[in-house]
Length: 368
Image (cartoon, rainbow, N blue to C red; front, top):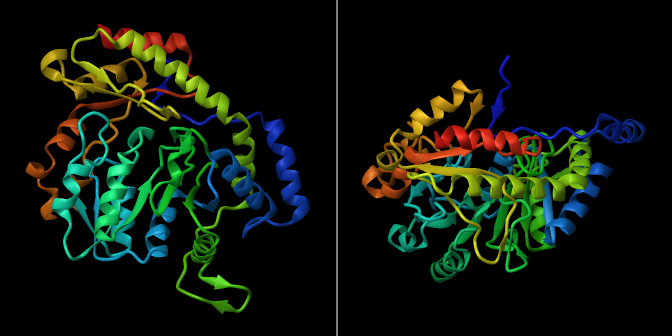
């Protein structure tokens, strides 16, 4: 049977290293609700990431939904159509209308030059995405937000460990939201986090994810149940021991892909941003059908015949899904670059256990 190679897959640490954590959980008889391992993981992550305050969540989508609640965002939010659909779903669940603007062509993140034209009296925030972990143009976005009195929530699902000029990208904006899904660089199986900048805001967020409780008998506000349990926290603590090696392995794979694909006409990829420490969460390529000879979808299907399962992240655009396609900002004329990217993008396999020989095989098939 042909081996299946997926775009990404989780690293499972040795079982014998995980068992002591489980024994500790059983000994403590504390399975969830801000347990000892949960508290330890928050401390260690804050230190590793270079942030002051972090609040763990059971998944990244609930973290996004709660971040919007924490800042009392309403009305309209300017965002990107080129992301995983959870970005816009978090707005919908808060009864907020997403206003889509186009992306910049080099790194496919929200184009700051398009923001001000989309601002209306109903606009309360901007929700950009650090696509594939490449930082948005944060200085321009933050300057526009300050000028117009808008909040900024960064969807940083891909940006674990990413720094710009030596400073964590997660310190930008009012809040940043991480995903710790099983396929991310750092994982708690399912999970996520909100990064904030004050003890008061962390207290507010921690209340929100625990039904709004303050103490045993007082509910301050309508909250939600989005707590990370102790088993997930234990898995995260173990993953954190390996994460630097994960990132180094992903970097090696990325550099080899670039070397092997650099001379193929019609295939392009993103270089590292200057001054940015990357996490190498994905390796996307863009397929120009006119130059390459076949379409992205034809290449996608061809790779599958060899057991190589790439992913068309992000296709279709969020704005082309039925819940959003009727919005005025979803028109294709408004999102020319995003629509072109969605039709050309293909993320190639990248994960710790992917061998360099397999990278060579994938690249060879693309070259042929």
